[in-house]
Length: 75
Image 1 (cartoon, rainbow, N blue to C red):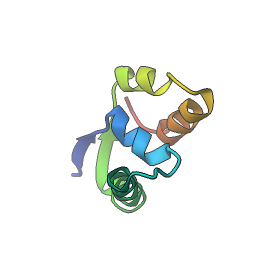
Image 2 (image 1 turned 45 degrees about the vertical axis):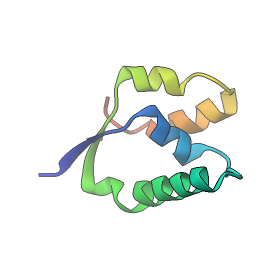
Image 3 (image 1 turned 90 degrees about the horizontal axis):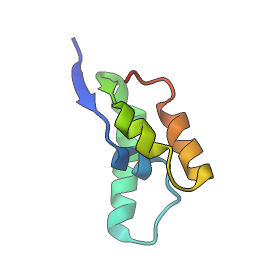
């Protein structure tokens, strides 16, 4: 049985945002992308309708990327 993990909106933002000039943000982006690509499959990943709603807000192109990233996840 896999451990369960809840994904919140900041994860989606780090995952899909343009690379930052801030070194701390870059570190968070890189860590998030690495986890998403290499470790996510080790967990049952969940999110809420509130995360979906929040991910839908803001710049339309950025929102589209966030929603595409979570399209196959259960909520």
